[in-house]
Image (tube, rainbow, N blue to C red; front, side, top):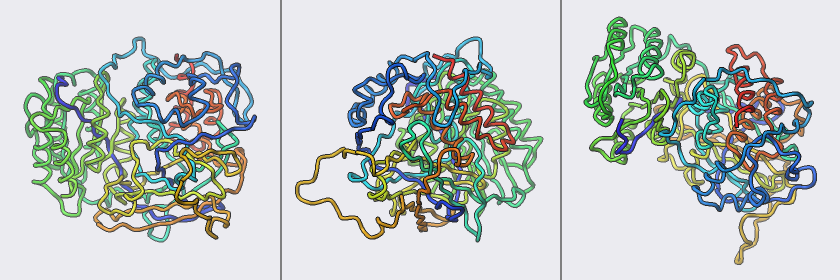
Length: 586
């Protein structure tokens, strides 16, 4: 498809309402990160950078970049991207993590394709990995929740084809949030429960890792509001391959199978021209016949299609129901005569009118993840990448409630760190979800939504106050550092503040939860804590992160294998297989 005009990519964003339930011995908290300012800290011998003969099996950062975080952040985005790509992959296995015995690397189990796919035309969001922020410089961190999972499925596609993904394709929070966690159900009518846990960071045990989890309330799918769905389908010539339009049709057929008497589905297609293929109907046979009749051909004219899809959704709008356009595309989304800004304004207007936009990505070679991410966020929708029928079943059948039913919208998190307990902090992931501190209390500021039954997880790596940390900015000339309050002497590590709105509300509610560190060792942490840490470490290795410390593929595998839990769908075991595969790729 031609790419002469900007392209956009959309992802499904689930909505979830959040109310904290302080459970178990820790505290319930929500994670939030802010400031871009970097901080360099001096590690003692235990936490010092690895010697050359202890190098982990991932691209080593240049010595001048590893020595301090501040120079790393100061680099331009292009320079940082080139530096990451230029690092050689070390072939030697790294040392096992704290508490784990060394073991021979196991052979990869994931299927490897005979030929590597052509991905030269793919585009991803340009972001800088978060560095440590000194609490003395900024004690607050603010961000929007994110429940998208597209990055994990996309990374899996790369690894199964025998290729490491580009670092910019790895969004840590989407890898972590791909998995289910055994969080407690909300009580007392709350839309979600919040749980927290603190333990050592496996890749740098002298640091602490704060795990924050949200569990949205689950719903009986038979009692969900009527669904008014419009499929907006890309049938341009590039959609002809088996992993695109044929997989798309089979995937949407699964969603049709769950249609109820009150639900309606309409179909709009776009290629060289756009048009309505099927008026909204409850007739399953008619819907399946319309899907089966689709064939790929022509160029891409996405703008005309999206306007027609919104018009069809408006025509069959269900007050109080689920009104959503679901865009399915291989990535090239030509905006036609409209500018990207004009199209974004259209999507925002329809969002305010109660029609949300979600995106399913398909195929290889021209995935325009960067633009699609932007549009999905503006459309209050989810984003998912479909690489197989199993993934389609997960997104469109198993998680249909969370994908389509919002329990809380505009969910924002702001974390305040206690300067007597924390010297510096780093939010792991959520780089594209950054909010200014002032946005937290501004109900006009859009943020992520959470869907029924979904879990959301965020991780902070913390440098204890006992460590020697230098601020990233010069001392102030005209004022002195503020004096800690009485609350700072309470022993609390941090406080999580969370704002969210009712799905149809306009005013946010505030939730505030303090968190303490009970100083538990890694072996006493929960399976969810250790598994999410393994996924974060996996992402750092793929991302060639300068913050990876003593990370190794061996530690990722051992940590995840020891934290599988029930794993009824086998997805945690699949992750272990992917980690073994990644360890063999250079």
